[in-house]
Length: 144
Image: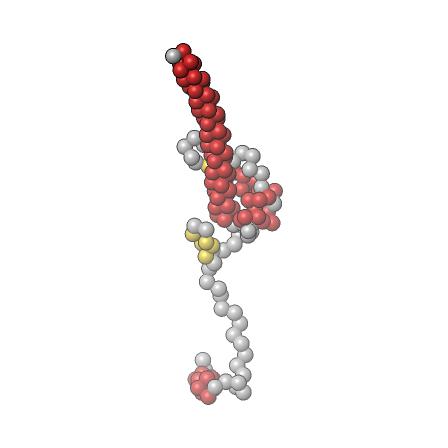
């Protein structure tokens, strides 16, 4: 009977050691996954901020920047991304468009203003269709 109790005690101790090892492995895996997730979210937020700031190639801008102060807080928000992009903009301005670009920024798309018409091409009567030739002739005769 004492042998049975002793073998159960040894089995219990072995199970406790195994459970402690599993807890350590679980904690290490959880920390690794949390770090990978934080890194992916931080990179996505930096890429979005780079697009809003007018980066030509946001992926390259994110690769070239210092991410030291960009962190994910306890509530899951990314802090410091806008400041990091502004710092990058000052240090490596060639990665971004010029400030005075006309257009309207909507999300991540920059909508350019309508282009102004250029100088009209000279009319070549030899290449014009008969209809175009007649229209031009009447415009010339009417004084327009």
